[in-house]
Length: 507
Image (cartoon, rainbow, N blue to C red; front, side):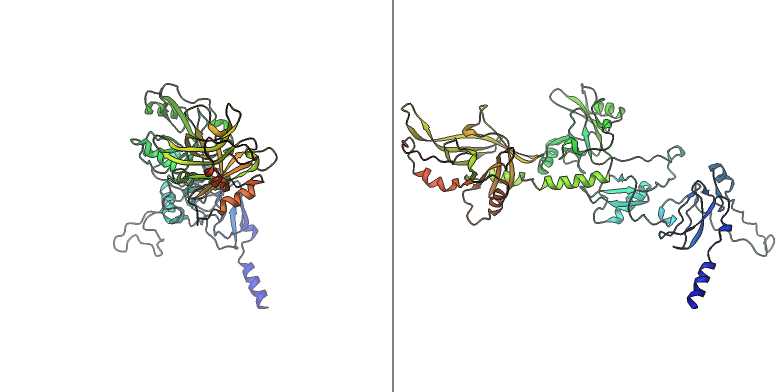
């Protein structure tokens, strides 16, 4: 009985359908606590108790300041209330028996912050996001991010969970007093820190800081190298951000209408100054421009706009790519004063090669990273006798990171690499004392690989290299490390009449 009375009392509080007239409808108040309806300029949203019935304007109507629902903006102006003037009081004269309650000051025409509207942010951010210009407290200080978005006129903020943890704003932008009426509906989308150089098609990423730009370009490029990519250019205007090449190949950056980023208008070939190039590029609708090359050429670039689905995809691909970023550890191995020995190799790598006990020693880093490569082997002389030889060549080593991962490039003073070596080699895995290189990729089987390790690697854990080789590389394997003692006992120039067909050799 009590439940029935309470239910009837609750229902009695509902507005009837008859009271919702003139472009109005009956509906429940949502959990967010405000009525979903369009409003006239300067009219706040109605707050309500969740799950209570309320009259709201129909789909094509707007709520006017006096509560009526109208179908045109002209009718919005007609219903604006005029604040009554406070009567002049002289003693008790001119004072009504029941004077109306007059506020101390009229309410603002439009709240400047969403807090004054008492509108909670949506549970799931939707619509376009706008780059706030930096991290602004993200990812740890959400309030600082929110404050920066309120300054820009946006009601809501969120820290980007992908890639850079920058602060982004979203929601219907609140008009500020400094804006002119002609700009009230403009939503300037600030670019994401990724873009494309139009003339070359290369992808770029804008770092948050100058890192020496514009006076010390090398410091910027060193920072890019530290991140595993090549340097691109310095920003022409303040704050002169440092730009690096981006990780991913162009076909991973599908941002809808890609024609907007194709070559076409790419800027003039001549480049008298960076400022001139920048001005020409921006006048063509691009994000900026810079001069590059011995005979300076103007390069225009265009930055992409933020896109959440692509951010998730790029984050996934970057994580996969970053998991193969062994650039720093490989450079440490190649710059080690210890000998680097060929420890294990896929047997099919050199069935036709007689090169054993291959090793490498550090030479120097000026101007390039150089190492010697030594091979013990057998070769026919004029007497058609096989004789042992020991040959050493000095090569330049260059370690790069990009797609398809970390690679080692070899170059020599001559056009031809010795001992059947080639370039580049893809690094499958690397630790502080060892690395596994992909020598050849077969068509239908696992790749042919070689495992290199530092000479004094006793007590160090090289299990990651051996496990990767077993899991990813073609078997069987030859443990070339076991032949080092045999090579050391051979007399250089001595004959080798009983040839033991060995599969040991080079990587």
